[in-house]
Every structure is written in structure tokens, then in C-alpha cells.
Image 1 (cartoon, rainbow, N blue to C red):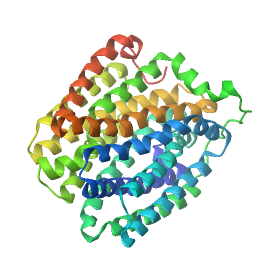
Image 2: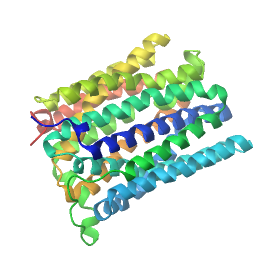
Image 3: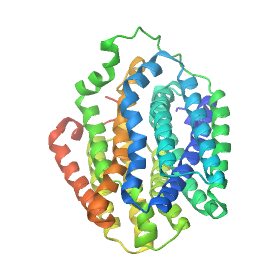
Image 4: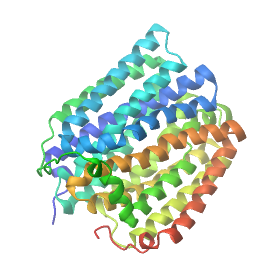
Length: 401
């Protein structure tokens, strides 16, 4: 009988760091989106916020992988959090001084994208060093639960706190980033990291080659990329809140939190009862249900139905996330995890931030509801296509190969 993940002290500190930093990030993003839409009333500009966060992830991916495999991942993650603290200070100053504008928001979004380009792969590559391998699937589910809890609390708190002023929200974010920094500094490794090797061209592209040669991992990552790229509606939630569902910032906060409520319930269940069989089919089926729920959200004009549809998207996306992350981490040797995690972060960033740009662009062309409807139908087609394109993934029975 293995110990639960939170029985390991360093994992507890890591868990607390993720909760604090995730709450801060979610609070910031809901207010940044609301401020941008208040300033410009443009779906295109909302999409640009997502694009500005994605571009650094793409540009820095190879550098990130090398740094994480050559340097202390704890220190890299600490500097990422410090960078976000500094950007939060810019938002506080701009809001209090009245000079926060469209260009400043996009500049801050670029900076956040650069910090998260390092942060996300660092978290993915650091986690397996904090618990024994047999505990990792449960640890990933617990980590996902911490993130989803933060996503529930963050947007809702940010939306309600916005009544006191955006600067109050940003100040709370700054305090949370400070807590996250101190918790990360307390993390100690359970397993020694692999020795770093000299960097050459082959080493630089090793993560890409590794994923390309392992079709099950490639299929899992690309499935998430195209499904969320098409089906994500996060960037358009300010439009739905204001113009379609007719709710204010509090309603936007609840809409942002709804997917996380569904995801939290599922992640807590998976932390106790990890998926054991037919993992490939479960992943593909979960993506299909995610697409169907997205279609329902796009058609809905009821606030309660919209909340329910978003909760379903979060629940079934979490099944896909836990399966995908477990496959990647368990099938990747530690000396490659930094580079593989960096490539993985490109897929995640493309599906989220680039997906926000895609949503904003199609909403500018066709309207918000048709944009979400098209994306949900596209996700259903992707799930069906991947069943044929990656038969080995569909036949995968267990997480451990």
C-alpha cells in the first residue's frame, strides 16, 4: 500500500505553491479580460490577449527544455513566479495611475506568456521528482485538483473583488505570488535529478524527436491541441456574460469557474480511484463529450444551462488531462522530461492561448455563439478522426506501458 501524495512534505509545499500561483493567475486573467473588453469592446482584442501569451511559449520552447534539463527546476520555477509578481506590480501601477491601456495589457500578456513558457514545463518536469513513480498518477490527479480548485476560487473571487477596483484584485494576486515563491523555496527533491549534458543541436531537438517517435504520446498531445484549440470558449466569456447572458463581472467569474468545478470533482475522484483500464478509449470518448458540451454552451441563452455545460466540459477535459499527463510522464525518462515537457507546453499553449485567438477571430467574423458552435462540432470531428489516425492510442489499455 503506497502513501498518498500529500504524505510527502515536498509535494505538500509544491501543492501549496500551485494553489497560490494558480489562484493569482486566474484572478489576473479574468480581470485583464474584463478590462480589455471595457477599453476596446473588441472580440479581436480579447483574442490578441491569448495570442500574446502563446507567442513566447512557441519562441522559447527549445531554450526552456534545455534549461530545465540542465538547471535546478525549483530555481527556474521560483524566478517565473517572481517575474509574474513584477508584472502584477505594473498592472497595479497602471490601474492606480490611470495609464493602463490596450498596449500595456498586451505587453503584460507577453510577459506573462514568457514566464509561463518556463513555469508550465518546470511544474510538469518537477512533479515526478517529488514522489515515487507508483504514486505519480495519483499525484498528478491531486495536482490537477489543486489547479481546478484555484480556477474555481480565482475567477469568482476576482469577479466579486472587482467591485472594489481592479487594483484590489491585483494586490491580492501579488500577495499570492509571494506565498507561492516562499512555498517553492521550501521544496526538497525526493529523487536526485539526472546529470546535465552538454548542449548540441541533437540535444536541442531531442524532445521533438522523442515525441515524434512515440505515436501514442504524439496522438495524445495532438488530440488535446486540436480539441481545445477548436472547442475552447474561455476568451469569449466576457461577451457571453455581458451581451448574451446579461450578467456582470460576478457572472463572468462564475462562468470562468464552472469548468473548474466539474474538473475538480473528477480530479478528486481520480486521486482516489485512478484510471486502470481502456485509457485510450476513455481519453477519446472524453474529448467527444467535451465537444458536445461545447455545442450546448454555444446554443444556450440560459445562465444556468451555460454553467452546467461549462462544468461538463471541465469534467471530461480533466479525464483527458490526467490520462495525457500520466502517459507523458511515465513514458519519458527523467533526463528528457524538461525537453519533452517544453514541447508539451507548446501543445497546451497552442490549445489554450492560440485557441483564444482563434475564438476571438471567428467571433469577430461570425459572432460569439456561432464561433463556439463551430468549435464544438470541430472537436467532435477531431475525436472521430484521431480514432483512425492513432489506432495504437485507441487500443492503449493501461497508463504504464
